[in-house]
Image 1 (cartoon, rainbow, N blue to C red):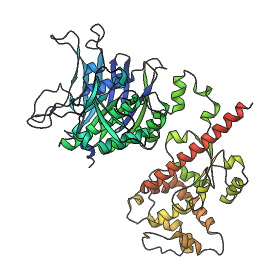
Image 2: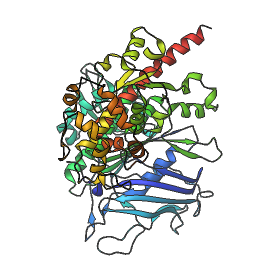
Image 3: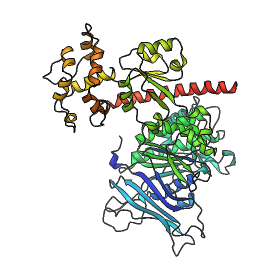
Image 4: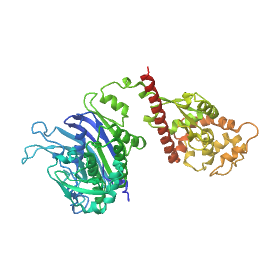
Length: 567
């Protein structure tokens, strides 16, 4: 069962005032997966090392008296990572004052955010080198004043040492892990899923220079697996370690999984599958995953999630292009590639920043679209053609005649009542099931008089609405004096076939000064009201838009590249 948000320990942010190659830099972490990328020498692994140093898992200070913890991961090691595993300190350069880091953590055991944590170096008489100490923690539950201690939280750090090829391990043998034996089905399933292999039937734990576990088939064993297969085994073993801990430790508050070069030894499909698996486990086990990678596949995979949920997923690109290292959250791959290749973005393939035209049936549709699509990364690729007004029949005719601007090069957004739009790969329908002007009417007409919406700064009440919509309400034969919980507007419209086209009455209402004034304010905009109460439909529309944009963008890019090559 998922933990309540306040019970989950999360690393929230760093402000690194100074430490080695980093100064005056903010790193904000996602709740579930954070991918750190950048050129060599931008201190990606340093951030992982700092994160590991903040936590230990030997005592629970939220208990009174303090509870001693003796839990081990499936490699029979404590859930912590010593500083010496990440850094070799210099007695000359790593001195007190040369590390000054402000840290914010939400401590799930105490159910509170700790904003003033300080990580720095401290001299001691019994050591030749300074050692890192975390200060300004909160007192223990029994009232102890000792605040120079790490936050209690289980950590697994998977460093690059996990990539030692089996052939180069001096000590290498089988071992037995009871929990793995009882969960070997899950272990094999996860390894098979990540590696996209169907012949995995066995799971073997190994010991020696490096402790691991591998999944393999009947025709080979642990002595024959690749570095990539062994890497996947270690990753899955880490996930199962947290799973076992969540089952055995009654005061479980999640965990922190740190992975250096997460893509190492994995082909692109396996990298995508790994991100998906980590996403699933980070949710079910309340894990926070922080990893580094240079892989465009892995960066794109995390970016895909972050475009939909920036609280839980984030990419952080570290760049030294501006002098000192700076952090750029959720940069797209085109920006990252330009920086990695040390060139201007505009010098890249001219089509890489081409905007895709988006066409609508009318201005009402573009007004609705404006409120539906808010993500900057999506908007930056779109050019909304708000002054072009064509009927759905006209767009269909252009598409049928294969006019490329409408059949290939752009996106056509139809009103919500247009059928069979899915058959066109570059088209989609607005949500709501009605043209936008009709949707505005339906939303406001169905809204009870006592709804909070009517308590707005424009003094626009239900009575004010029925006053300006009186002619249309009469024509549709809708009662004025009752709250209409749900109106079958399609049937009402169907009954108005004689006389002036009913669509013109809806447009007339939409263009009134009152409705136009409502549209100008977020708090009174009827589209915003509908969006706030239909999050699933909004999410589905944005997902379809992103898929459509990618299809059109890639198709246009492919054809442009071919044309350029033929010049």
